[in-house]
Length: 341
Image (cartoon, rainbow, N blue to C red):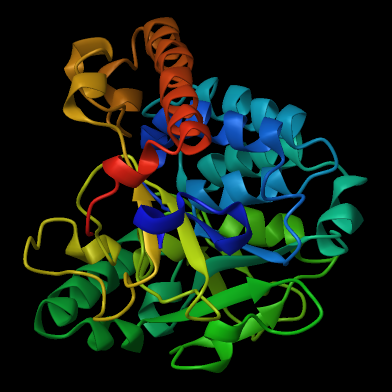
């Protein structure tokens, strides 16, 4: 379709955001260009914003009353976090809760839930049995058990973590009504900030979110555990596309698959995905020639201002990606650039 007609924005029915910690800073320029252009917000069809962890936060900002302001608040809040060895899962959870409240105001909540053109689907997992424990030893053993089970079959990790998607809109997104394995719960004014916190609450490292209003009883954590980058077919029809800005070429289905090079998204889930990602030449421009990483919190623990400077620089450089993509779309050069996924 793109080779024939270029990118027709009316075909974009889904915008998907991957998890991946601070790597999302290379998405800043693309996201800003997307919000500034309002090509999705003004689409004649409703657009589903779907993601987990940082990808879920990006989607939430896009649906806020002032998306560009909310997005910048998220970028500042996340990058200015300073942690130390004295932090615990509880204090880290408190910091994340402040981050969510920094970019989602009380006024934004009804705006997001009643958005004129966006529906949301935010991935979380509900921890089961020992995975819900607040004892770090027990929870650590549960994470290890889930990983070992996942080595045999991805379905086995579901014994300890139940995929739970919180959605907004008049009805469930179509992907939840088809071959989806998990639970679907509605986003409400009572639970939206808690869902925002849960989707980024890494097991073992950050405390989970217990008993989210309107959902099944349990402890909810990072949705990236089972839906790390792209692990579902979100598109509602053969003529529609999912727009997926990613920070790398490889698409990892679940967090447990990061080091399993043979694991790929389920067959058919990428058939209608337009993946956009930075090339090696762009990555070479970044500090140390690499993507930002969660380990930066540790590596720059004694010099957080340097970490912040680097992440700000990556955000600034990423403007190139948004400019180049929109130039390719507007000039229709994207017809020559696009390649089979």
